[in-house]
Length: 186
Length: 153
Image 1: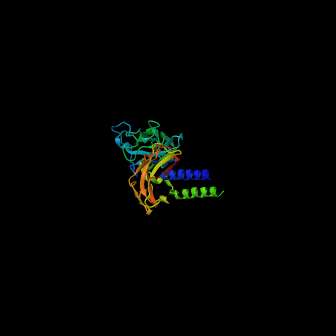
Image 2 (image 1 turned 180 degrees about the horizontal axis):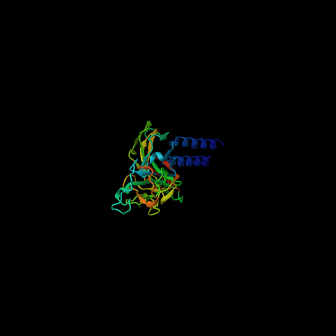
Image 3 (image 1 turned 60 degrees about the horizontal axis):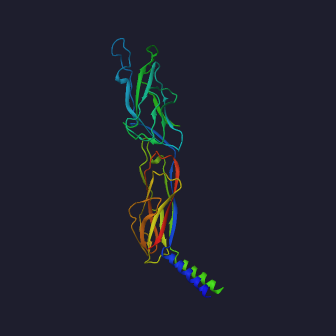
C-alpha cells in the first residue's frame, strides 16, 4: 500500500514538474514552385526597322555601303528558368513573312552583352548570320538567368543589307516588308 | 487494483490539465508563372503571401499563464539562397494577449523566439515573405516545414 502510494506520488510529481516546461509544437508545409520558363522579346517594343540599299557614293562603286543600309537600334532580351542539369536554351532567328529581294542579303550581327545580366546568360553563336526563312541559332548556352530588360540591355542586334551580286539584283517593288521572328527553345 | 486505478486517473487528470497546445491551420504556397515576369527581367527578389493563409492558435492556456513561441524550419529540399521571414498580421482573439512578432523574423533551422503572450488565442494570422528569389534557382518545387513550438513561462 505504502509502496503504491509512493509510486503514485512520484509519478504525479514528475508529470507535474514536466508541466512547468511543457511544450507543444505544430508545423505546416511551405512550398515554392518555380516552373521552367523561357521568354524572349525585342526592345524597344514594336520597333520597325527601315533599311535601304543606299546609292553608290560614286560612279562605279557598289550600292549599299552607306549608313542607311545598317540599323543597330534593337536589343534582344530574354529570361530563362531551367531545371538542375537541364539543357541550355538557344535563341533562333528566321524570316517568317516576306522575302528579301534577290541579289541582297539581310544580315544580322548579334553582340554579346555589354552590361551583365543575372544568372547564366547566353553568348552569340556566330559573328554574322544571313537571315532566311529557316530558323538559325543566334544565341546559345542560355541557362537560368536573364539579360535585364530594355534598350541597351541584352544582345544588340545589327541588321544590314548587303548586295550579293548586282547581276542578280531584282527589285520588283520599291518597298519590301519582312518580319523577323525570334524564338527561344532548347 | 483500486490503487492502480487511482494512480492512472491522477496521471490522466494531470495530463489533461497540461494539454496546452499550439495549432497551425493552413499552408503557404508560393507559385511563380509567366504572369510574374517579363522577358529580360528576373523575378522580384522578394515575394509575400497574403496575410490570412496561415492561422496560429494557442489553446487551453489559463488566462494569466504566460508563454512564448519559437519558430524554426526543417528543410526538405529548400534552396539555401532563399530566406523565409514571418510576421503576425493580427493579434488573434481569445482571453489572452500577444506581444512581438509584428515585424518580420527570419526563420532559420534553429528555433528562435517569435512571440510572447499569455492565455489562449485563436486565429493569429501569419504572413510569410521570401527573399533571394532569382531565375538562377533551378526550376523545381521546393519544400520546407515551418515548426512552431510553445513553451510555458
